Image 1 (cartoon, rainbow, N blue to C red):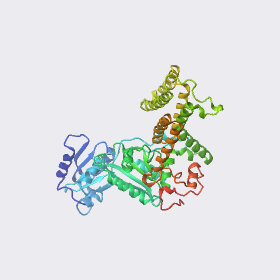
Image 2 (cartoon, helix red, strand yellow):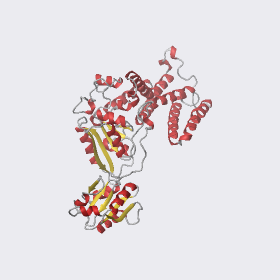
Image 3 (spheres, rainbow, N blue to C red):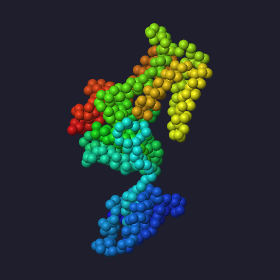
Image 4 (cartoon, rainbow, N blue to C red):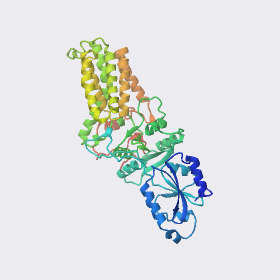
Length: 482
């Protein structure tokens, strides 16, 4: 062991120099005896398990014969019979400070040696099913804000020695724990090197928004609206992606796990498809794809045919309002669409017992009154509501918000240029998606570039017994999953 201080008193002075004496109540320094040897105990109150440390101190203070039976002196001899499994020596003061701030308890001996014990007990909740990834049948556990709990939830599903949790600590003040999780032999070493290098390049004081902040540092997202990673709060989804060769990034204090690399179609998948028979799962998936496409184009397309009646055949002449009213149709659509988005935000910020009542008032009373006074036509309310329902079918919250932004852009282009604007905006959007390559992976794979067999597996939920190799985009050194 390396001697950190000349004496125990110097260690106490070092602690007070960092935290101040009496300036913060949770930074605790206590002088005590470990058997017959005086020691200094340092910890942060609230981050340690008080029951465990009390049990340890009770045993060590109540029995002085055990240390006398040991031969030799010094910290190495002392650690050899310390009655706790997670005990380690400390190499320097920076490591000691980080350990204390992480919730470990530190002991400093009279000679100035230091060692820590891991008795962390972070405040948090128990695993429960996430609200945004519910399934009819399946496990009801979900990730929490505790990194140790999250790694255990994954380990429980993948009982293999090839599962790796590579720990990193980033930012200056936050010192956030980040675990790069992957299956050795399945994950691409090139992708792992990319993530490690980006983590080493982070120069910031803290990741206050945890996983979302990390995404922006990893991919230099800038003002790109598309999500470059998939977030999940379900351990079964995380484990399934790890087996496919994807990489999971677990951030301490975040209940969401980052999955990379991903494409657009990963954001349209849901665990419910694999909790049903293959035929039913395929039907659910196709309906979801249809809903996602309609959420993007339904409103602009209806505006196009409502304002350009010459494009409609006679048997569809009923489409479009007969009396637009005093407010232009475009402003009605924009106002109703933005109003529904405001209603969604209000529902999120409204206490749960009141949210249902608030939704009923907004949907029935305000909507009907708006029609009666001529603010909106009935068809505008209908198509905006249907478009919103289609948007709710998108599993990824990030992608659903992005879809709304693109929908408004297509609507404005259609209003400005008519039919050419509608198709031109869709072409520009398609070109933009084709140009995205996070981690070198085409965002529209396997549609662009086109891989027929892989595209078939995107559209159809094949039986689990089918021989399915690992996806090409993971660049796995071993695509055979057997």
